[in-house]
Every structure is written in C-alpha cells, then in structure tokens.
Image 1 (cartoon, helix red, strand yellow):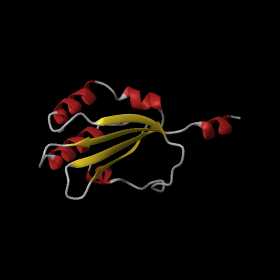
Image 2 (spheres, rainbow, N blue to C red):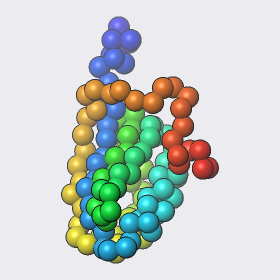
Image 3 (cartoon, rainbow, N blue to C red):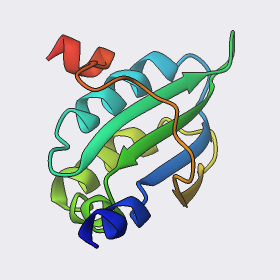
Length: 117
C-alpha cells in the first residue's frame, strides 16, 4: 500500500515570471544561481529561462513536496530575495503548482548549477 501512496505524491513547483530593468538580467541570473545553490532537502532542480534579446524571464524551481519548498523559505531565502528585488522592473508574477506530468532529466543527470558547484 505504501508504494501506491508514494505514487500519489506529486512534486511541487514554484514559478516566477518577471521582467528586469534593462541590462540587469545577467546579475539576476548570478543571484538566482547563488540562491538555488543553497537549497538542499527536497530540492529537485531549477530552471531559469530568458526571452531572447530581452530582460524577461521565467524561473521554475522543483521540489519533492510543498513542505520541503516551505522549509527553504527562511533567512537565506529572504536575503537572496532582497538582493534581487531591486533588479525587477515590476514585481514578478509568482505561483505554486503541482507537477502532474514530468518528462525530465534521467536519474543521476546534473544541472548547470550542480555542475558548476
């Protein structure tokens, strides 16, 4: 029965759509990567997408579950947020989602952030 219960668990995703002040996307990317590198328990990966030739982007951070995601909303998270907030042209749109379908990296694959660490 526990296998069935595990099957019913879904990962959680934090998604942010934002637009940065002109010329600040590179700095925002560095701060994003620094913040994400501090995530541990339950962290499954992160993506930062940039619209070509623009200062608009989408951040997607994947977690095992909502509790793990909430546990990382701490002083380190708040410090990272305060460092990046002045770069936004306007407040980002954010939301939390349940991952209901996943076609992703095979087990053992690393992301760019993990490879750089």
